Length: 458
Image (tube, rainbow, N blue to C red):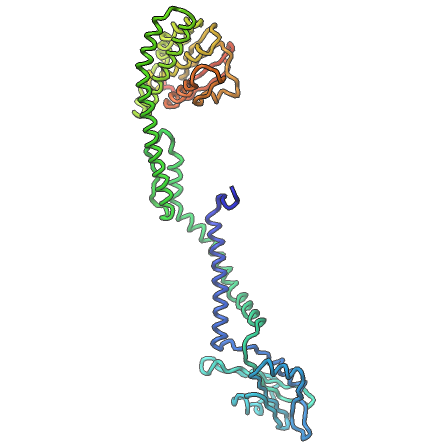
């Protein structure tokens, strides 16, 4: 799985993407505002009057008649080429003046009234006059022609550097504080919004966690969940419906197959009884008995699962006595002794007596089939509600004690049987709310223990 396929935090991703979008929108807004101001004249041009005054100061001199004039210095030529609308007005204290460019009429005669001012900026009222008119700069400087008064203003397109500086200042002064404020609000509000929007998913997730194989017909709720998630929940519900249908077909097939097996197994038993006594007949009878038990257990599982556990009070002592009585001839024929250790008083649980007896029968038949054809097979009933089956066989390796309850698992590849008996024992015990386990027997061999829920004694 690639890094991009890993699960991600929706709150974090939304927060960062919203913040990125806000930053882009703010930058675009700053650029639009600066561009609009430039286009409308509210932000006019490169206002570098100090440079103009400095160039004029170094180029100013007097002609032969004592009037003011400017030398064509390289700086002045460059200034004139860069600023087509350049204008300036120079006046000395003797009343001589020098003008270049289109000096606005408002500034042409203002200098005499400001002889005592060393420097000033002359501007306009923004909303009462044309904002496209440039402000002017007045400054007194010392030149070769003496102390003079220079009034100037420049107006033209912003240079790239100036535009970048103005945009940067606008971003730092307006956009950056706004971005910080919106980013803080985004990282606080987004998790809250997402949490509230997906609150209904917690309930749906709990419903999904409670679904198991024995709870068919369960569906996830679509209430109080976002519309964007409804298709996913609907698809899951459709998948659950298909699984229910497949499970039902599977169960019907298993039940039908178990019913169909009853007749040939009964015929097989009848024919086996007619055979002459001997080891082969004993083995065949054991196999036929196991087949009959497996078929009945399949029907038990289907019946208990379909009928919703029609349980009643069951005496485990009587269950053990019935199984021992039925299996004693088979055990003796196989070379074993069958011992029953049970109290005289009932030990009760809630369950299905026939299904529990068949589960116990399966364990005893398993001991008969896989044992050494000698020794004792014991059935012991103990409180609070457990039944043990012990044998004197080779036992079960520790590493395989969980695996033997899985379907089709066999200790040895050439072992007799299909590996379904112990799995069905576990299924029946679990349907009763209990569990089955295997340990070492007291005299060697294996000890299978079925533990069920007891009924408290009055």
